[in-house]
Length: 393
Ligand SMILES: *Cc1c(COP(=O)(O)O)cnc(C)c1O
Image (tube, rainbow, N blue to C red; front, side):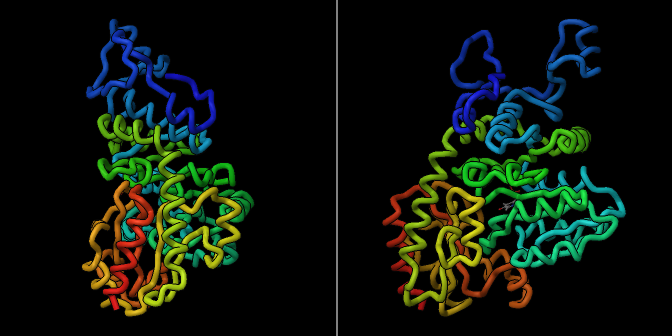
């Protein structure tokens, strides 16, 4: 493996698994379930952890390792493990680091499936949870019990773009000897490095901005060596490994993450500013707009606002569906973080089963639209949204 020796954006391009005898320039795809040995002694030593040889692609694989090394460099993490999806990364971080009888404190503004894991499944393994309002991190300390093990947050949150001060939570976590686990999917390590702000574990859905082209599912957990060791041990036996093919795609994707996130952020800010004051909406939310309630924190811990912009249609729920139908270019799809701009209306889709009150708790209102700003010309994106707004009344 090429060493982690340059600045993160260079490492994201240059980290590469050892060349084969063909001396290829671009990393080949290692589609193999297992690896071979020249002798019984070499095999014994490998199983005894005395060599760096691979054994089986559920444990490690050259393509997966290359991807993991890049994510570690980008996040400034000691170690990492790549998973088949973002959800398997989040789930593994809970399962490997908590025991029956432990207690999790999580912000309530989190990705829908993470909310389901916490509220519907953790109790199966005897893990308790408490939710806090992400806008009131000062309430976290009062929720800590003798059995609390972890604090979990997403910042910015999906889909409400709520932001919490990572360093403030890190101080609380350190004071009480808790693990701070941050889902950094929306910002990516290009715009926000939670480990530098004191987080112990960072989880990712690589499906979103990391791939950035809507092709493959993937996830990663990176952070402190001793915690990743637990996650690796758990995953090695339970099997949520990333496929070598997806790792090969994602490792290539990371080579362009810096330039893509800069462009996504620039276009998203153009869109957010272009929507401010529009007669058909009540508010627009973007981390780098001064009107964002946590603008000061965003400025402090993020170097750009990312590619998600949210706004509220004046006409509520019904305007939401009219708006989606009126779009000409933007795609209606469940994903985000793509080169193609995407519009979604959480209240009629992902969060349709919730009451208005329940939606408010997770930062969603009935006329809220989430735009994932792609790599098209920013004016084309803005113009499509403006014409759809006219028709959504
Ligand atoms: C999509 C997403 C996940 C889950 O990732 P998958 O790759 O879809 O499993 C987790 N957290 C956030 C913030 C997400 O947006």
